[in-house]
Picture 1 (cartoon, helix red, strand yellow):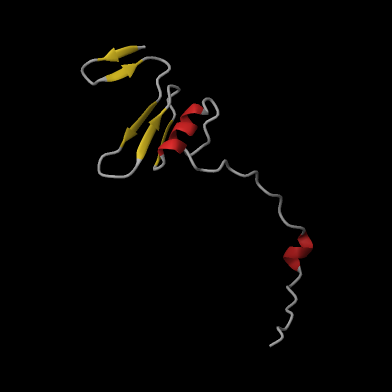
Picture 2 (picture 1 turned 90 degrees about the vertical axis):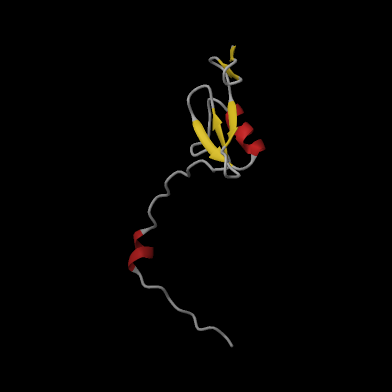
Amino acid sequence: MSADLSTGSLGGDAVLRVEWLPGSDRLRGRCHCGAEAQGEDPALMWEWLLAHPDHPAGGPGVPPPQAELPPPPAHLITEPRTRVPALV
């Protein structure tokens, strides 16, 4: 790990960065593997970075994609719904 004195930042193969995006409340996280994400919560951003190599897709606070559900049974698609009158 080496320091770049012109920018005041560390360089190397294992550096994690969280940078503030000026003019906003957003942060950008950069992992040493090249993954980047944006978010507003610093704690979630660090959790996302420290989860390397299993970064959730989309960045911190974004739930992982759900497995695609199978289509509903054919009888639910072809049969009309039965309406039950409401009691008033």
